[in-house]
Image (cartoon, rainbow, N blue to C red):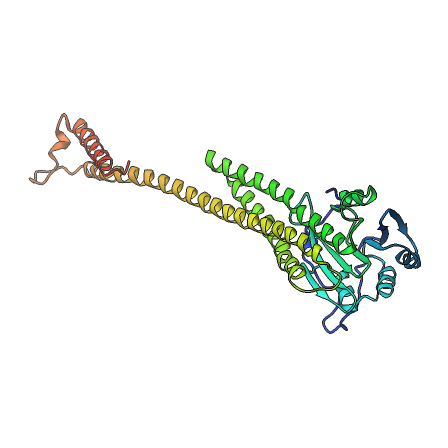
Length: 362
């Protein structure tokens, strides 16, 4: 899924663009949002229409002429266009407020004449980046909003153009299912890439420890956490579409949504599994580092323990006390005194090494 615009990681810190106390339903457009473009795909039976729309009034005539209409809005920078669409389809102001404030989690809201659905599409290159997708489902119209160009729906558009599959013969509720299914399926390639990273880091840790591995594990856990935060609300959202008796969704579409629900569960389970694996790898890395440090400290302690009695012996014979007292050091005048002291040190060191080995400390 190609992206036409670079992303700033800081953009993940979503902030509301209105002050506390602002009237509910206020649609405040982000001044940095992408310019708005509108693409309409209308179909029904053998009839088909696809065009870029500049004037909102054109959509009214298309809605009258075709059985199913998909209005795809790319970019949320034009408040006039968004307001005109909301007026045309009589969309609730609270829902339009959620459209332009792109920090929403996946959810379903039911209004008098429409169903409002929110999903999040993951970037194929970076799991930390997700995009809010908003949908309004009415009896004959599906209206979708994207933050920026580039999505995972091009194969779906090609199926509509070539009249393949059930989309053209079904209503816009089936089209909503197809869009949601494509969004959820786009998580699988990202999960496969993260799974390869997990296997690669695990193999590196087995071969040998390196400080960079902990940094990789931390980054991987951050991506898995962001992915889990994005995909997990989809389970409840799709479950509401299946369970609740919502208008404009046929029983046949609910059956297809069950398959979509299964895909969400698979992704959530995979994310949880890999998060546990990264936790285990982090614990294994820290345990290995701790064990390595313990081995080093053990060797140093044994060396220090061996040299303590040797230092004592060297200190005793370094005092050089001479005199006529019976407590003098007779070895000072002894011809073999120096070899004797070295031999005594060697014997003590050998005895300590034998003792340590017998206790399995070496």
